[in-house]
Length: 276
Image 1 (cartoon, rainbow, N blue to C red):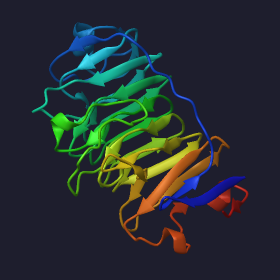
Image 2: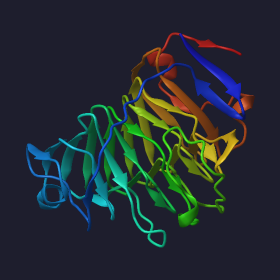
Image 3: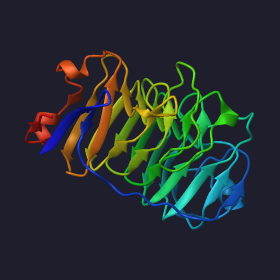
């Protein structure tokens, strides 16, 4: 049974999940469009030359100084490694940008971290693009214009971050006309004014064991801000949710606590709702 509860102004679909984090890094500069079919990536040169479509498997941790840009049909196998954005204090960027007509699938344990952009610090999903998250952890990213103030920390808990209004989607930004499918993985420890975890203007589909929790508003630990649904947007439950699924939700309509139905497909795929 799935449990909806009200906590810190958010509704939660109750459950739990684990995440993985790794060690050393390899630097990469420039914008990368990833990847070619079935390529192992361990350093800057192999990442930058993996242009096209297909599957990339990380064999080392990688640091990027500009967004990884996805324009084709791409699968990234994190393989227990980390992709870190490490731009200069005066240069912002999402860790990954999925551009129009691009399709990104994220698999395996590993971490996407360090992004700092006004929209989509971790992953920006543009109009006409699609992002499917089956695994991995998106953490330590922010939608911010205070670029030098944010130091990514897994699970958050660093210095307070002052964020102005309309800085959207610390972990993932889903543009109008974009699609975000989440069947697994964890989005946690990110920050934004709206949607510290995920900001939804487009389509958000969930099933399986997605976890979106402990994301923050304005970098203040007392203000949870996980999934933010713009007006008339809903979360589409497309298949059964496991007991480990957990998602905190807020909405532009400000009436989630008054019985507003913020999902489609819940009754079809889940057996009941517990109060409390």
